[in-house]
Image (cartoon, rainbow, N blue to C red; front, side, top):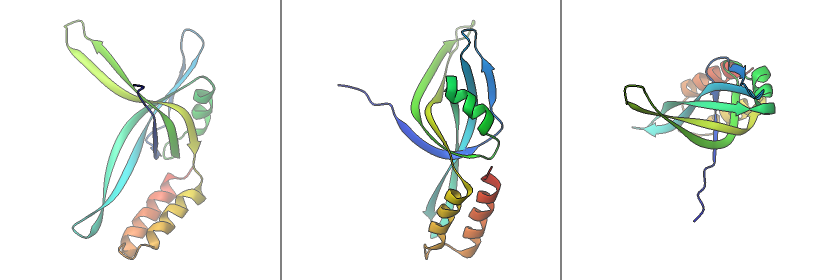
Length: 141
């Protein structure tokens, strides 16, 4: 049976990316994104934010180094990779990262369209739309 390891995630870049060239000469760009999930709880719109570490390699790393800035809205297509290591004291650690195979930099219009979808929902208050719009304005590069 084949395994599938694929994901699509959208969010905003948390801080400016870290860029380096490894010893083989390959570019590596790493950054974190914050992805929001909106849901209804007790009749009101609530939000949950999750943070994910992303790494990009080679040409994609070069592009992300120049285009990804704090607050930039992005859509990432990639896979999950687990890193495991052991400390000299014998403690075991692991970390999960998203290895991006494609990064799409969203435009202001795309983010505003998402807000328009909220406006059309009769269960969403004007205050909630205004809050999301403020977030969208901040998130645009």
